[in-house]
Length: 288
Length: 257
Image (cartoon, rainbow over all chains, first blue to last red):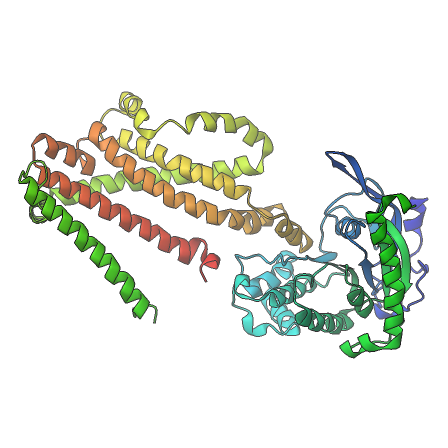
């Protein structure tokens, strides 16, 4: 069944979201399809099921947030899509090609910045274009650095930048190869609230220029609603998808949106969903 | 800018000079109380000995002989130890195959190798190169091996997601990740090599600073023995500082912005 699923023509409408994301990316690239994904880790106390038979579809150009309490397998799912780990069973394809390992089709921004400390800021951003043999990697790097407002720090070592600046360089580096998919694993989790809010707005601004498919992992409800077209709320024990919530907030979005009534409505709805899951961890017997 | 000493710099140097003055003062006092130039000559007598040895040129040739052996042995050790350590760190079978050998050979001090070095290589330069290389090898090896294991998985994942192949991964990710530890190993290795050359020359050579202090001991020229010791100390410190500068400017500049 799963094999048939990804043999379907790409134009096929997938999943429940009616957001017209496909029009955002005319080349139609950046489609993620996962069928029957399961992930079991070996632990000392026995096997731990991080994910159990999960189906996921992300449309080209869609901004998807994975939201849930710790232990819901949201980072596991992201690592599967990135090819960093392999599923115990199930299939996963990006634009029809099975994911075999980290590859240039999929940019990654980690929770802690993963800039190469031995390269200057501009060399970090130029790394991808250089590896892929793109013409003039340094001028590409300069373009993306000014996009995140850090062109003045091109010659600096990453260690001399603040946490927020490091993450901005990380985003510039991940985008510099023009990947159809961008995976972000709680990229703003280590930042203070002020910086975080500004970074979210900046990310949306940049995203609106490229319409890369984004899968964004977070445990912050406001962050998920503010950024995403669709919020996938994950469940625990075992990990999987609990419910998907479509976010029909107008774009472009700015920070004032957080005070709107619709935003509040989403917040309340998602809060309840997550609360149920979090309680399950505290009272395992009432779980399911 | 960097060469103009600030108040903090001046204070640091002040304390350093005071420390040396205190040391020389205590030495002079002890020599005066002991009043035996064979057991402990005064600093002034050592300076006089230094001038004599500089004038007749023997000190320069001894220093040259020792330096040649240290740098030669150190270079051999570095060329062998760094690639071998990285190979062991990155290839599991090679690591499993060679690590028992390393674990067994490492605790044998260089001095214990001197008899066999003489048997194999005779007296002179070859056994000294062998001993200095051996002394430098293990610190460089152990640190490079640890460096080979210190690569962060996120860096590898990020590099692969940016299109790096196996070759680029090694040259641009694994090697720089290991470089801080390699640099530390080189610094310790050079120090060990310098200590080992003196030991080797005490026994297995007819030139160099180790031989020179041994010969002067037999002649009861204690002042000249101390000249040799002081030169050993000063040159060791200079080499260590030199390598530190190389480390900060060339090998791992990102750790010292």
